[in-house]
Length: 286
Ligand code: 4AZ
Image (cartoon, rainbow, N blue to C red; front, side, top):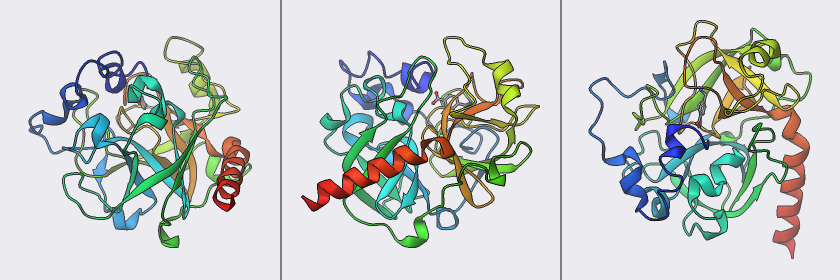
C-alpha cells in the first residue's frame, strides 16, 4: 500500500534504482525465525493450496522468487489480489509493462523452485479502486494455464455466517513478520477474528491511511493486537469457515492494539469478479 514501508520504500525509488536495491531482499536473515504476517506460524502450502504469491523478478529481484504481494485462487484460471498491488506506486510502471508477472502456486519457501510459476495472461484492475479511502481494492488475474481444482477456495457470499463478527479466520502471506521490514521466506498464517464494522469505523474514521467503509471493507484482527497482516501480505487471502471472505488491503501499522487489519470484502466484489471472468472468456474465444 502506498503509505506502508513496503511500498513507500519503492515509490519514487523504483524508477531510478534496481528493484533489488530497494527491497530488503538482501538483508541478513532475522535472528528470530521468520514469521509472516505478524504473530503468525509457518504453514504448509499443500494444506492451503489457494494461497499464491504474486511475483516479478524483473521488478523485485530474485531472492524471494520476485514475490511482492499475495493472491487467492478462486477458480482454476482466476486469482484475486489487491488493486493497490498493481499500482504504479508498487510496480514503478503500469502492469502491462511488467514483462514477467507471475502467479506462484505450491511454493511455501520462496528460496526454492518448488511448485509452479504460471504466467499471468490478463490483468484486470478495478477501475473504481479509490486510493484515498482504499475502497474497491481488488484486481483479477487470468492465468495462462489452469491450476488444479483442488487449489480453488470458494468465495463466501453475502449473508454467509463467515462474515459474522467473532468468527475465527486465518490470514496467509509472505509479508513482514515484525512491522520492521523482516520479510518472510516461507508461507505463514495468523489467526484473527472478524471484528464488527464499528471497531474499524472508530479506528479509521478517515486519515492519510484510508477510511473504513463497511460496504466494501471487512475488519479483522485481535482486540489486543499481536496477530495481523502486514506489508507484503497485501492481496492475500483471509479465510473463515473454509471460504474466502477478504483480501489483505490496509491498516495502520501491523498488529497494534486498536488498529485492526482492513480487508477487501469479498461479497462486495463478487459481481466485479464475475464480470472480469466473463470478459476474459470472451477475449479467449475471439
Ligand atoms: C500494507 O501496507 C499493509 N496491518 C497491509 C496490511 C496492513 C497494513 C499495511 C494491516 O500493505
